[in-house]
Length: 370
Ligand code: PLP
Image (cartoon, rainbow, N blue to C red; front, side):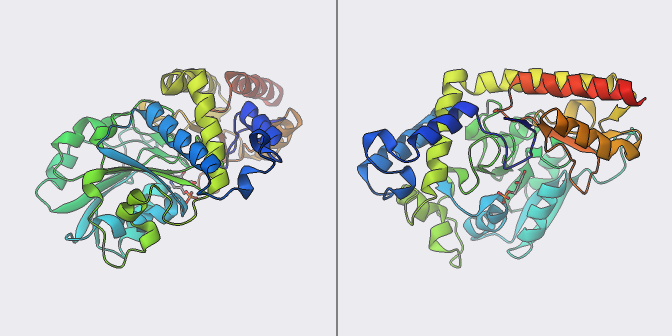
């Protein structure tokens, strides 16, 4: 197998794929695949409940919060969240740190007045740096007393590689509205204080499993704020009351997510993921910073531990970089079209060995081309 640096759908742990392959035709001697099981069967109920309880364990989700398995992806949540939280409110607050959070605020305008209360699109002190997390303390003044339904931010901007490091969590209890966080691309990579959030959501296809399931952690106090137009299948309260089985859930994606959670628990849980992410990111950013060919546009302290964007000083080398990397079994390194250059996504399932292979290649390439 190659080292796959895709931003998502992303690499899954090899042992998980092997186990899924072994169980594909005959799950635990039952003579059928998990794909073919009724979601109400006792076998599937066991799979589902273990998956949910392992997830709760991994993130230490308190009893005050429900864990829902939904559909529609994180982009679907851009509509599902307002439909669930806007009853009785006219506006919500948004932090804009990049493409994903911007998209969320834009979609919201179908449901209410979207107030961008913090933005990193303006000038930066260091002009060489284009991406950063803005100072979060002003949020308190801009949000409190304004009757906001909630404050939304994206904890890890997958495209530009900008990641928060607890700044919003640290002030959440001083805000007078719930915090909603898009954690699609960094959930399960660091410990969280879940009680500080109203809603945490994420599409599965990075650290959780295959695409198709959206994980939602929601404060039970927010289960009854849905607009009447909210479809029943997307109403948090209805989904919660029915144990995420109001309608057929994406059963196979949830099963694979369960195998990923088992794998992560065996590795040492989220603490393990956090220290591994730190080590991998330091190695890669260290290589970029000590080179004259590679450059990362993100301010040092705000660099994502999951998605590492970098450009080559000579852009005419991009195509050769990608083709020579692919020859070495290093794939899906092309940067997002809006940023250009390269992007290496190094989620939980990417071992340190894969990142070592990448930096070795990058150093060799620099030597041979400059
Ligand atoms: N938010 C973030 C931070 C993402 O990385 C992505 C990318 O997949 C999305 C939202 C969109 O997710 P989906 O394609 O599952 O709707």
